[in-house]
Length: 101
Image (cartoon, rainbow, N blue to C red; front, side):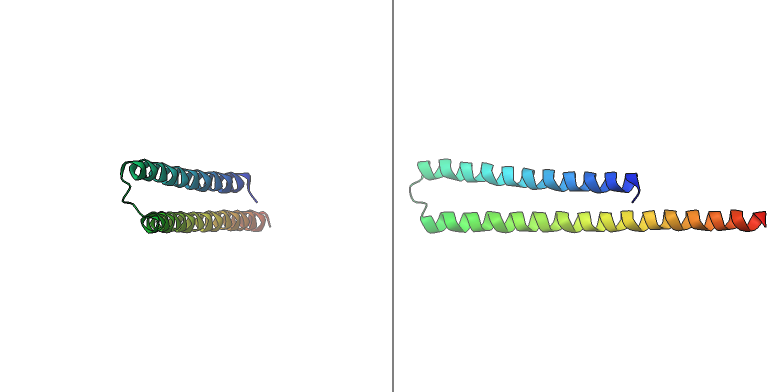
């Protein structure tokens, strides 16, 4: 596999990891905010908090699914481009070989 393809895949992996970290950080911030509000408002019930956490997890799932889908498309494109480059190289080599005959 070409080095540039490996680098692109590693970069895509790093972007995905950073996106997941960012989403997790945002959820933690929201949970901390909810915790502060709970301290201020004692009328929040356990069920309310459970519903809020379920909503946050659903949102995180959607964000991760979108980003994984995008990463898959980008990786597929990189593979197709690298295949096209290899095929073009083979065609050029064949043309040069035939020209020397």
